[in-house]
Amino acid sequence: MDDHAVAARLAAEAGELLLKIRAQGGAAGDRQSDDLLLRRLAEERPGDAVLSEESADDGVRLQRERVWIVDPLDGTREYGEPPREDWAVHVALAVDGVPAVGAVALPAAGLVLHTGEPPVVPPRAPGPIRLAVSRTRPPAAVARLVERLDAMLVPMGSAGAKAMAVVRGEVDVYAHSGGQYEWDSCAPVAVAASAGLHVSRLDGSPLRYNQADPYLPDLLICRPEFAAAVLDALAR
Image 1 (cartoon, rainbow, N blue to C red):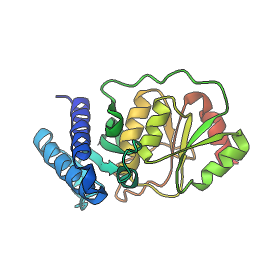
Image 2: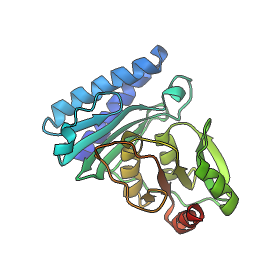
Image 3: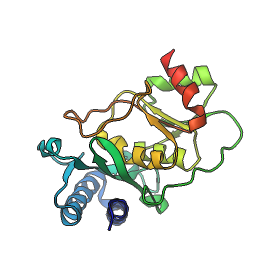
Image 4: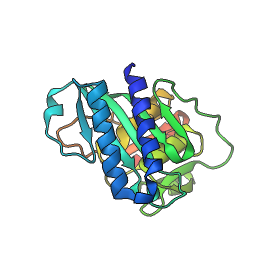
């Protein structure tokens, strides 16, 4: 399998496992999905390094060009609230710091979106700009966008679910500030970029991965026709 197929296959396998064990709760889901992904990556790509939210970072990845960046269960809270669908599995490959390959599984929705078959973003529905926001902790950047773009908020769960909502045409913009890590965004960014969406930091600078500190606090994924207006609103 090529790298795109590996990412899609492993995200799907982890998603299937998570559906089977969902009654055990989020902690069990995090642990067992992580175990599966680490085992399968060791089988499929034994020469590559891995950065996972649920495993210790031994620093080996910093000497490697190819690093798999995974979030075994993105949206633990939503996963623990069946039948919610807004949780995900992220499997990405960063090559020289660039998210080159990615797959985001939305297991409860029966979907795996990946770079091997770049998604086609549907035409936009008429109406105000729609912003994907957290159900419980909307970031400060959102308030500025609502005020300056007369935007409408669409609450939902995990980072992957929000990013894929842009890809699926359900919202127009996902802007996050206030704290994330590389595993929160690497796979969603790879998939969104492959679909032709704008991806960047909130100041418009590129997103870089496999850094010594995996903290990557802000993110913008949006339809390209809104990128300039969103970046201008954030900069003011």
